Image (cartoon, rainbow, N blue to C red; front, side, top):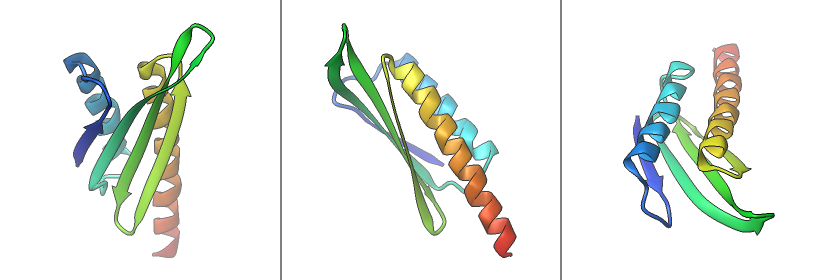
Length: 100
């Protein structure tokens, strides 16, 4: 699986490693993921912090899955977005198995 990271800021090595680790684990739930695009965005200022947004676009055969999450830190948003993606992958895999 190829992982592409898009951000309007410089992504640190630590953040890049965390993204690759979290997104890489998704292949254990569905091994036919071809590529994943990770979009890191900075949202509006809420309270004292800027909202961090993580969007995942996951390409699987015949389908593109999308998960988005907002949080006060990139790490929290990444964890929640990958969890949403995991649920979508499990549902998609179950659909594939029921049609075959």
